[in-house]
Image 1 (spheres, rainbow, N blue to C red):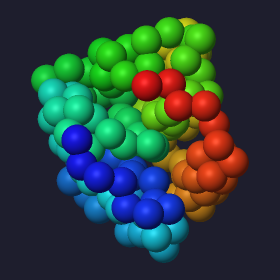
Image 2: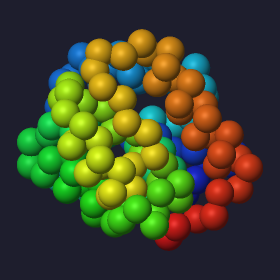
Image 3: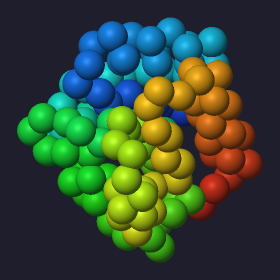
Length: 139
């Protein structure tokens, strides 16, 4: 596993749309945290094992393991809600069933696309503040 940079929280952005990944990266880069990216579910899980991210921005619809499968692997169940890594799921799906299922799997935030990028930045900033305050590590 990669070493944590002093005082920094690793962020993983997972989306199969390269433009979305770049837009999110640009929006959150001012927060000063190291950012990695993945364009499918298998790569996201690989990076979770290698880099131990603190925050994950996760698309629901992904090739090679969907967002729910990735979320289930890294969070497990709702008892993990609020534990590291903190996960914000983003999706274009409108249904409430998707949100409820994500909540059962332990998602920390759930955003429907399109959303104001400033809202996502605020969520990531809140996650950083929670981590700085010493959220109990789930690992």
